[in-house]
Amino acid sequence: MFIKVLGSAAGGGFPQWNCNCANCQGVREGSIPARPRTQSSILISDNRQDWVLCNASPDISEQIRHTPEFVKHGHLRGTTVGDIILTDSQIDHSTGLLSLREGCPHRVWCTAEVHEDLSTGFPIFPMLTHWNGGLLHQPIVPMESFKTRVCTQLRFTPIPIISNAPPYSPWRDKPLPGHNVALFIEDESTGKSVLYAPGLGEPDEVILPWLQKADCLLIDGTVWQDNELVTTGVGLNTGKAMGHLALSEEKGMLAMLATLKAQRKILIHINNTNPILNESSPERASLDKAGIEVSWDGMEITLGE
Image 1 (cartoon, rainbow, N blue to C red):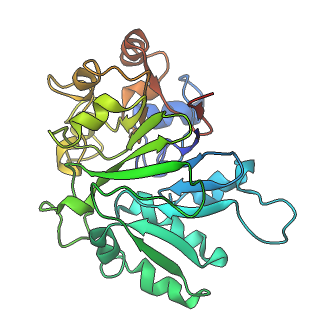
Image 2 (cartoon, rainbow, N blue to C red):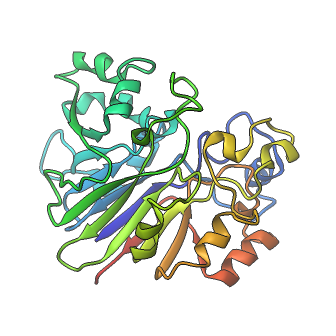
């Protein structure tokens, strides 16, 4: 199984265009050791020739420019991406579909709840019907495994997770199970697996067995502290209100990761305010000591070779 991280930041990217927090100012000026990052999404493949795109970031055009895997050689127009899977209907995971309109039709796998949000409050599905048929909805049901048309050695199981619906959704603060899923992805040829959960708000008895089973975790690292936006002076939301579990809280993400036996534990969807983006910070040093990795744009992960 081959995974390429296209974007590793949370909504807004890093640096965020309108933010001058210590991290954003530091990376712009080059005064801190940190890498710029685009908004989160990944590519995954079983053969390095055909790819499945998991989430479509608003930064997809920039990501494509830096990712030769997208190029379909020998074709005037085309893409190596055969299918697209959405884990939720958040702006930072779905807006990129608009930039892919010239390549329609695209098969887009998502739950009924995500499809409803993207057909009403943020109507990408009906808008894109004007481009060669637009987006072909491939329904997924939480806890029911499925395979995409390409990369047939990979089996995807969508696991409902506790998080939140987008701010534009009528289900904000009262999400249904299908509004947010993690993807447990298993390579049937090797038995290796990864759990991709960029929006995990709270581990529960549903997701825990899958966290324990995965060989690799690509998991939510949005904020270090729940009140991080408040303490940095850039916002009023808490991590919990946005649907994210803070890393350093007493029962936070790091405490949970310490109980798991995955060979690799990798954080993704990292907010611009998070001190772990500064590679010389004590928070980053604590991750290094615990064997927890911080993903970056272009990071490659190989399982089973």
